[in-house]
Image (cartoon, rainbow, N blue to C red; front, side):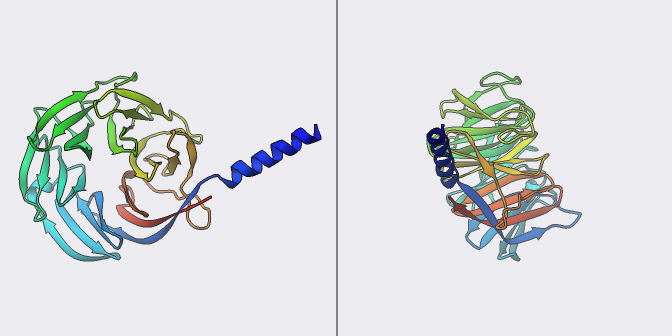
Length: 288
């Protein structure tokens, strides 16, 4: 009995010692005024971020928290996402029922239009853009070279390859597309061919569960999921198992007002808090 207890204690110590912890150190934050709606953020470099303001139709570059340039365009008003892909940007233009491709000067050089379309996020792989079509409960695959729909999958529902307000999308290292579903309160993992792979999470307020999952991002093989209701950001390992809740450097859980998009590049995390009208920029640190 003593031997068994000793083995259990040793095993517990080993697993706890190898548990991954991710903490976030605040680098700076940008808070907008009442007449602004920060909707998305692009991590341009380690010290530079661009904030897309859907209310004013603007994209403003900040370096270490100070604005250095800004562009305003009428067609940028009211959009849902703003994502950089190589040397151009992808814009979720829900008013125009399109996914627009923008030059570095923010001019539309290509546009994939659909009859009915409510794009809220986009991820790119192999020359295709995979778009969350929120109101239509589906994922749309767009051929970027042809600027047209190549395929789509999904309809309203709770089963496999059915969605209930898909919001954010991101590819993991294995090449699977992860989709947050706000009202199905889960992450659905599908293939590039739009086939079902597995579910992650489910409704609840316990560890590994979601109440209103919104923004998602990948840091290496770890999946970060923001909850628009609880204000927490949870992270999961490569197998989709709960691994922890994002904390500050003192171990206190980070809590936001209502997160929409989150973005990760390298060790930089950007969080868009719609309720606080603030974009937070953090440096992530991992510790075993």
